[in-house]
Length: 128
Image (cartoon, rainbow, N blue to C red; front, side, top):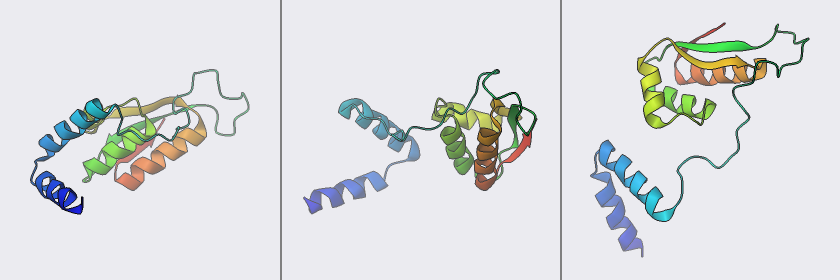
């Protein structure tokens, strides 16, 4: 069995990124699984009336990414963690069409978490 695995690793390492993407999609379809994390994430975008009236920060805020930085892959991953509804293409497009509204009318704790993830990934964010 180890020889088969070694051969697969060798063959896969020769593939281009586009080929790898197609391989992942084909395996997901064939096996009926998803590469998305199974961990449930907190709701990132809150409805307008969800926040308590007396919040210390003055209510809901919006996170706007103004620059994606040099490591776009890390920023794409952060965007997909923040909003799991974003596909790979949508997250990539977001890094290229700036400014991009990441969260709108979100709770202060969600805004803080999202802005920290994006800053760690190398993006520049603005809170409104």
